[in-house]
Amino acid sequence: MNLLNRIHNGHDNESSENTKSLRVVIQKKYIEILNKIIEYNQAIDSQEKFQASRELKELLSRKSSYTMLCRSIPAVRKLTEEFFD
Image (cartoon, rainbow, N blue to C red; front, top):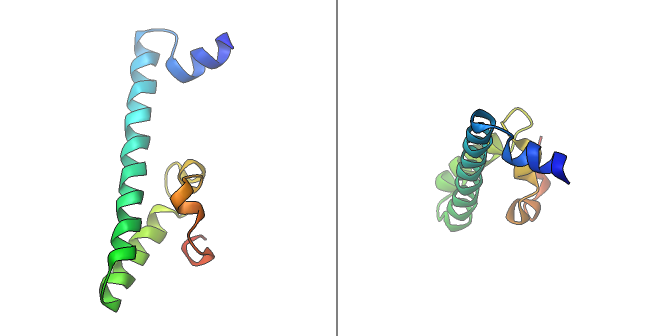
């Protein structure tokens, strides 16, 4: 249990700041993906839907940062396979 705490929260000032920064970056990506899903679902014309779809595919790509974390988001798991490479 102590080892997990050290990994997730850091063990000194520098590592604590680094893990805090990492959590902030991941949260921003999470929000960006959720907003893009909303944008995709609310798109009215085909051009808007296509653009949102393309951007969502980029966010969920294997080449994107934090892919596995992002693909575990409940809203993402409900997407069709076309969004995943």
